[in-house]
Image 1: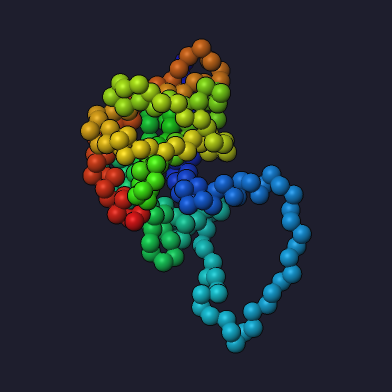
Image 2 (image 1 turned 45 degrees about the vertical axis):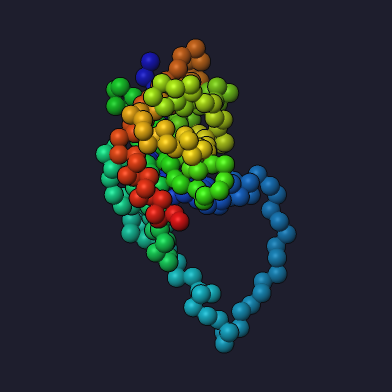
Length: 220
């Protein structure tokens, strides 16, 4: 059985970063609620307006997405063996980044996207990840992740959108160390069309240590 992902790889990174920063959840919640009453417009007197009050707009391409070199566009800052440091351009230049890898099956089909990022010190989770899988995934079976054959952990899916189904997961400091020391992790999902089968794809950990350190420097 061939399980081909329907993933729009170039456009999923800005969405994933928005979710990390807390914008995505609010946006999806607003879509499911009734529109609020229209608030009165407060005019800003011309003589009190400042440059920070003014939006200069964002250029878009023919598809309506942010222009390739505009605010909100994504780019690859550096590569670390199996990983890419992908960032999103911001207006003030403090571009947030993630460590990214596209996961493929034995036939070379894209099956999942894995984006990992550091989190502030002191919390239970030292790092987080956004994992995107095909829409044809059986959500009730959740997602399994294991490092170097260790006992896997189960993670639920958060939501689905046109780019796929998303799991937002957290890792302890010890689990991040497993990534640093490991050779590969495995991601397991179950397709809707074959609920008695499992799709297992490898997540290479080659280059992870250097890549995660680079990403952490962009997200203090």
